[in-house]
Length: 226
Ligand SMILES: Cc1ncc(COP(=O)(O)OP(=O)(O)O)c(N)n1
Ligand SMILES: Cc1ncsc1CCOP(=O)(O)O
Ligand SMILES: [Mg+2]
Image (cartoon, rainbow, N blue to C red):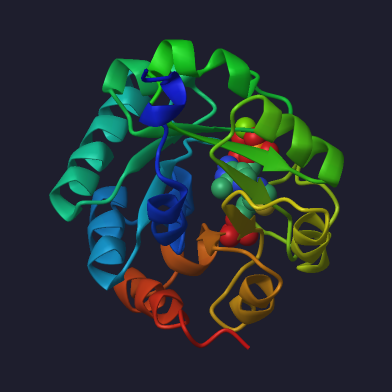
């Protein structure tokens, strides 16, 4: 008999998709067109994208929806899954591939009934306890951080460093994990060595002079973690 678990994303596939996880909204692109930034980043090797329209000056309402739709189309062209940050109604309306929620957002357990059993559900975790609860609530992957100081989130929790990923792994947490916060190609190897399956990145790609080259520098790390 089929259970809803049969429809959940295959963790092996998800680990590959988490490798170069680009997160961005209109305020992260230094005045450049987000559509062009995303197109270049995907050409460089981005494997997953999260639309995060948040912070001072971010678009709201219809304008945010329209940008989301355009970026989703770019992801479709590039064969990259499209994840929405925080907003489950937007994710459902767009038919997004998944959603990412934090500890202050809707609980993961409430999301699948709105998005379908095959949706990718990501949850932020800052401790073993939060990680265990998120997994029990149905998270497919965890976003763990901040690894390093970040210029992109004013209300970020204190920096924990790659050690937190090691701690989660040593407590038997085997679900796909991605590090977040201040990650550059130079700072990514300790995150991967600690046990992350990938890195999630805003500024190191969106603010790069050449987002495609920046994404390629992350993609080139795989197989080379120290
Ligand atoms: C992959 C990933 N990990 C963590 C976060 C942070 O989510 P959250 O704590 O809800 O903070 P906001 O991004 O909503 O400000 C994330 N977005 N993605
Ligand atoms: C959304 C988020 N959550 C924790 S740190 C962070 C911001 C990551 O952005 P950057 O890669 O520019 O540090
Ligand atoms: Mg959130």
